[in-house]
Length: 89
Image (tube, rainbow, N blue to C red):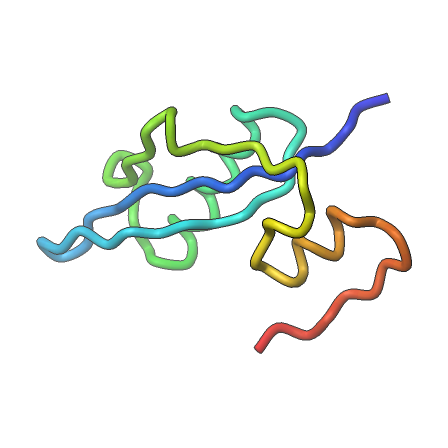
């Protein structure tokens, strides 16, 4: 059985001569899948291409304790007991 893990990925991207930092929580099977998901999400939300998104390998952290997760929706999926998805603010 494949287990889905939670990752916290930090990085930055360039847009209009500015460097914008970001940090996102994602649920994925592997680090490569998590990176692909981040490139997809940041690219679609901010209309930037993958070649202007910079992520260092040391900024990819696997989260084992669900209490460390700050995103309420990802936290509810990570805990999996009494799954109730809260509304985002």
